[in-house]
Image (cartoon, rainbow, N blue to C red; front, side, top):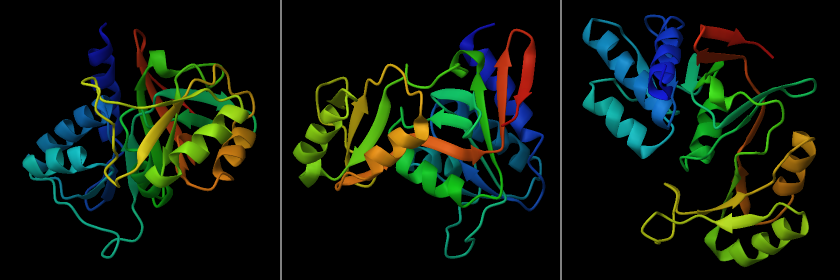
Length: 229
């Protein structure tokens, strides 16, 4: 089974949790894009849903598939958010602990998923890890504060590196901020790491999602298994 096949399997399983009339959080990244396309097929068949997207790219994809888009003025709380993750770990104190933000949309993702009654992660089995930290932890930073934040992340031993596009240009988020990707190696205490990062003035958000997801749908050779906190 290829990684794309596993992602599609997880996305299709997530569709089983979608009910008519729901307001959905539409995630970002490759797995979420597969889910949005599958959702678009259901909408063509008559499913009535509305969505709030976690990135401009996801919103454009949803709109191209005639999935109605709403906003927090009209829908301050969502029924369900479906999104991927760069890493998923089951922890004793933080439930399903995630690293997200590899696609650069961590701020909007955290806003949307914190406003959802239920948040389900969809991922292939390569994303399930015993301890977070192998995947670089993204930290979104106000551009003016970049030198200050960078120094303090270095002092914390988090090994930050400014994100650029493949062509060498600076990566700027939908909100006009920059990203520092921290090569932590291992994050044994995600809550402490999250608090240390959040305490730095100039940090907008970080990619640790703790005690937010209620279920992870992990697809592999043996099918899709449900991983609970």
